[in-house]
Image (tube, rainbow, N blue to C red; front, side):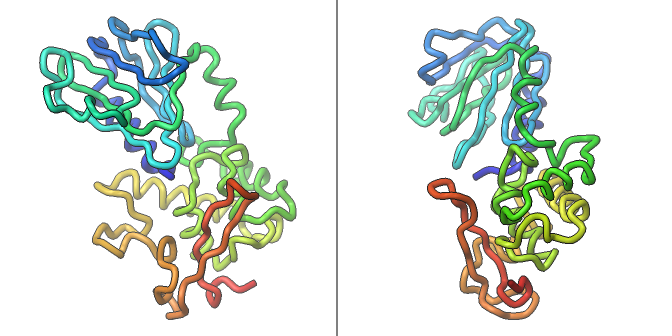
Length: 265
């Protein structure tokens, strides 16, 4: 699932090509948005909160999208204010296509697409935890929210967007590896939670600024993570084979990779 770094990069790219421009072409392949045409509206801003991309329009509405498991936003050049022949906008996986005189933004495999009043955006974000990548993020206050989860495992807690928003399976696993904490340790027993959240924030921000997603700062194949996705491979710290457990309640449980020696029970 795309994490906070991917969402920040997507929002920044959309903001660069859409903000301040008039939508000249709109195609929304989403049941609840049938018949909705955003053409003629000006994009005021595009930002990310947690795993949501929010495109604010001058009509007083905001177009909200969520990437879920494998969604992404693509950018192409426009032709006459519309997608070019052969554009990826013509693929059946394109759930939202928004163009201006120069650019086309294509939302592929979006997991959610809704139109909400901009004045109600605060109600949406208010149901989520603090965005770990946001300016002004308070790690102490966020750490208290995590500690309040009590005996709940730290891995599942960090993935809960209602506790803290923006962390997914990759940066949960990588941060806990650095902290030498097993993903199933209870949240209230993890030492220096503000430091843990600050570290996760640093990893996400570094990745968002990189050309491609990376939890290590390296971008070559097989070098972008220390534990995530490396089941059976030797730990880069001690050589012990990396293992994986499931965290969170089924059927929403997620994989959490860890080193059994570096992250003892």
